[in-house]
Amino acid sequence: MNQIGEFIGGRREPLKASELIALLPDTVRSSLQERWQDGIGKDGQFDTEFRGYALTREVPKADLEAAWRQAREINAPANLQELVTELVRLRALTKMRNETEMDSQIMISALAEEMAPYPIDIIQDACRKWARMEKFFPAWAELKDMMDFRLNRRKRLEKALADAML
Image (cartoon, rainbow, N blue to C red; front, side, top):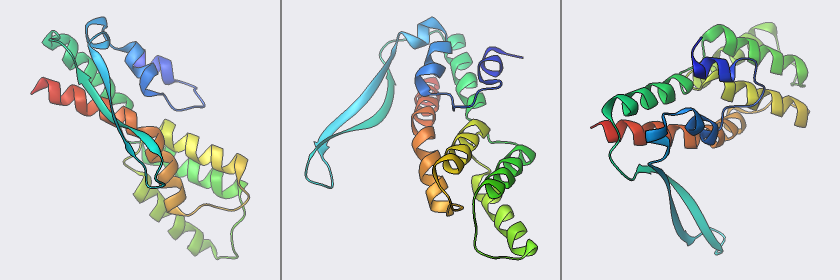
């Protein structure tokens, strides 16, 4: 198992971008800089928005490619069996309206299709946190919001590394 696989094996929380960065080659890690933009939020208050990462200096191509491969690996889509297991677990731990077995299967299938692009640690975190905090089964939009929030920085890191290789 590689360094990333060893790091996330058995974890209950998703890997944060900062934890992924800590695993990258020193040359990449030391040249990464977060980009922020100040502005006024929808509520009229001062707001600072995370915009992504940039590399501040040249990095050896081999290190950059290794970092990009690590970021891609950690952001890889979940396998279907693990994904369905998490959804069935969530279904067992929350209440739903009365439905038939067929309705339940269709719902699990539809959610699995929508969640397929997400990494398993992000899916597990969203499903398990929902089951601990809420009584009723979530709508797709609620799970999507939770997963997008957790995945945003990791995807932006992967994009910055890919852009730097061009």
